[in-house]
Image 1 (cartoon, rainbow, N blue to C red):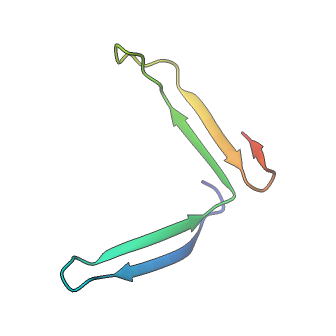
Image 2: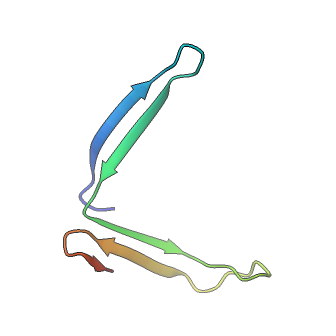
Length: 59
């Protein structure tokens, strides 16, 4: 992720439950690398995907 800011943060707790936190992030660009596996669980070639929210285009 690039140009990341925390856009929301919340803490909540109920009378009978543990407290929980919620965090939201806003960003201008995100990229991810992943390796798909076949049915034999053999990994293939790594692939990179992403999206630029400023330009509205895939990376």
